[in-house]
Length: 208
Image (cartoon, rainbow, N blue to C red; front, side, top):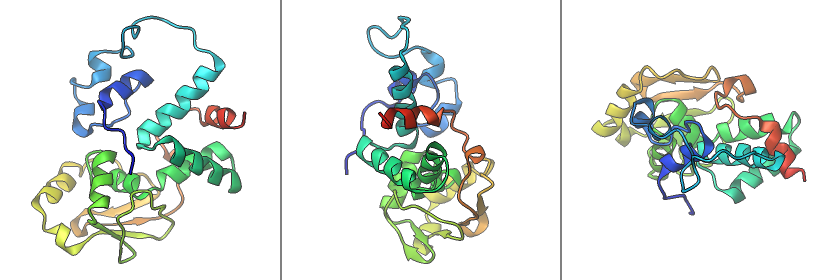
C-alpha cells in the first residue's frame, strides 16, 4: 500500500497550518509550524500571489495530508460523495472523517492518524465483533468499535489511551475508555469536523 514516508513537518509548513501529523509534538513548541512559520524549500520565505487554482489545490492538498490519504483514494471519495444526497464538499469530508483510522484517532486510542492506521493494520480492533484491519473501512451509525481482547492487556496501548483521556470526543462518537469500547452515534456533520478548509474549493477543482 502506497504511503507518504517523508518528513511530515514539511507538509504542515507547506500548508501553513498544523495538520497534527506527529501526535504530541504538534502540541509543543517543537512543532515545525511554530519554529519555522514559512514554507519549506529555497523560496519558502518569498511572498507569492496565489491564483484561484492555487487556492483550490492547497485546499485539496491540505485535506489529503490532514487525513493521510493519497490522490487516487481521495478522488474515489469525491466521486462517491457526488452520488450521495447533500452538499458534495460536506459529504466528502464526512466520508473521510468516518474512516476507521480517523475514528480510532478521534477516540483517543492513538496519538496520531498514522499511529491509528498502523494499529488498525495490525488487527487491534474489531467492529461489531468482527476483526477489521482495513484503515479505510467506513464506519456507520451504531457501529461498535472495540480493542480486541489480547490488545487490551498491552501496556503500550493502555498508556496511549490513558495519555489521551482528556482529548475532546466529537459528539457523533461515544467512548468508554474503561472497557476500551466506542460507538458511532451518527454520520458526522460539517460542524462536527474541526479541520479548517473551504471544501467548496475542492469541489470547484474536481468539477473542472
